[in-house]
Length: 216
View 1 (cartoon, helix red, strand yellow):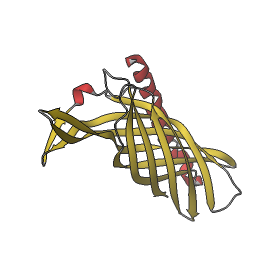
View 2: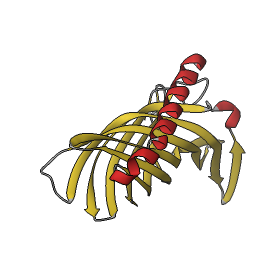
View 3: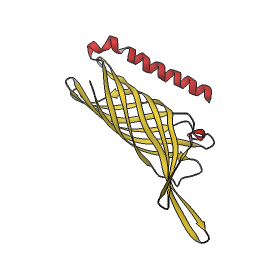
View 4: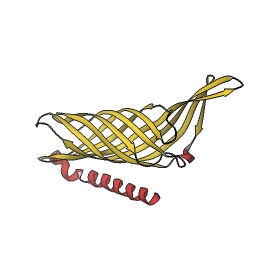
């Protein structure tokens, strides 16, 4: 598994730097656009032996590179994102006939690198719908649990229990609005992890994202 993670990381980073390096050759022709995207994450963790958890709402924001190919409907979108993931759940315990409950949130924050093929469809024009799909790699920045009990909040670092890398696939639908030198974009994305979140549990990240941004 560690060798697979190193190979995946090498491929993703090589692709990212290669395409960024192409910008010097292509920008004069308007093929490469740089921009910013951000939005909402509705995240959850899928466990094999636990299903009482609910989603955690967070945010994502990042810098993007959008690369097009002249006279061809397929391009590439990549970038660097700060992405909040995790899950929430309730803890109940009965002690001497009295039921005690606590709310808990697993907070996982990643640096995320998607490398997405972008397929445009529909008639030519300033409004361009598209489909995206491809792999992503996420690198853990922060991992903690936050629980509330009897009005008190407790935080615990769980970095030692969380895998340092999250690798998975992402698919989505969106649209671009080309306004001369600026392009406005909105996308709905779903990403599903292929590697375990926790070292000792079968657990995968699941995230629905709504993002919007602009490029130039």
